[in-house]
Image (cartoon, one colour):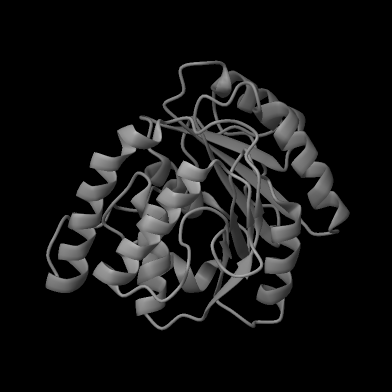
Length: 264
């Protein structure tokens, strides 16, 4: 099917990019509730569903949502790859501000607070922290422990000065997009690399505390992710400190691809 949204319509104020993988159980309810919350903020918006490698009905359900609401767009990344899908979703986003969300969170409160900071030009990037003072992380103890260990590794190996990198974030698109093009890793570590490179480039990062209570268990087992995370952290360390490593992934064409759908 060909892309059917009005690509020449005025861009929205915010683009919300949500990677989705095997989310058939949550997708429709989460997106519809999130749309209602965004409407309450009285902001022009689009939601970009970045499907990646799903084996359930996620693609079909995402396409149905896009066909019913012109503010929802979806595309399929060819393999299960959170970072790759998130990167491409950011490239496809048209809004002045980009919000990176999670389908099991869809935190309207974070969007509202982050948008206020971006509108006032108080920050170039706002990171929703699960670990800073004032945050409420209601995930299982192992998940909370893993987050703190991972963030400690980022501080020690890459000099990150914050408390969290993975999850909710919002940024001024024009200021962060060049940094997206410099990132060299994908999967889970891409989200961290984007935040770390933004900090190292001198962008103004602001952390705000968030309340996290997931609606379902992680779609990929935590223990199974460890080897890949460590490998990508090693690649990132080499790239940052030694100036070597894989070339950044190229940006996709500016025109939407054949698999991106919107309402007719």
